[in-house]
Length: 77
View (tube, helix red, strand yellow):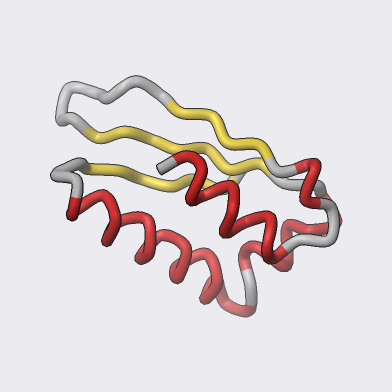
């Protein structure tokens, strides 16, 4: 899952080496939180107009998580 998020983000940004993903332990509800960090100049590329790209990233990640019977949340820091 983490590799998928890194790959998606690196395809969008100008500085792919600055992409970092940290993963929190599952909380009491079993939700795993993925924190995506990119360079400041690339933040707009990852969020997109009105957050459309960020929503699309979250949809793809949730779809993969559902196939693996996981609950996840993606936060863009």
